[in-house]
Length: 181
Image (tube, rainbow, N blue to C red; front, side, top):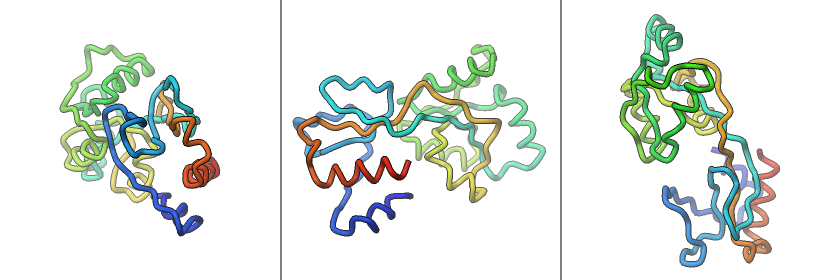
């Protein structure tokens, strides 16, 4: 949602966005840089920390007040949706809250966070997602937040090969990201 600000500040530049689950090979692709989530260890690449991942439990805005209160008090009893690339997120959340992992009701796993969000909107279950990806939906009341967010072990990084350091478009995008976040 903030990309419009980049285009306003840099009208002559274009950022192409691609969602990928697999690792990026900068030697065989035409990608100059990537925003990745992880522990910050990408050998041979420059990794600029952008944002610590904060995970939030989300539920459908279709829930009645009674259903919302029940879901918020008993998240462990809900069908827990997850994203396959962050399969340990619910275990991390349960550990953070001192809950037994055996009480988890793990539901479907989704390859893309956007698909998980759609499933939550359809009231299939509750999801645990990076807050930054649902801030607007939470503010607009399109999704409900259950409980308080937790800080993940992962962070977001701008990752690129050192040879791309001086590319004018990458420098502009990197500077804008650092100023924005």
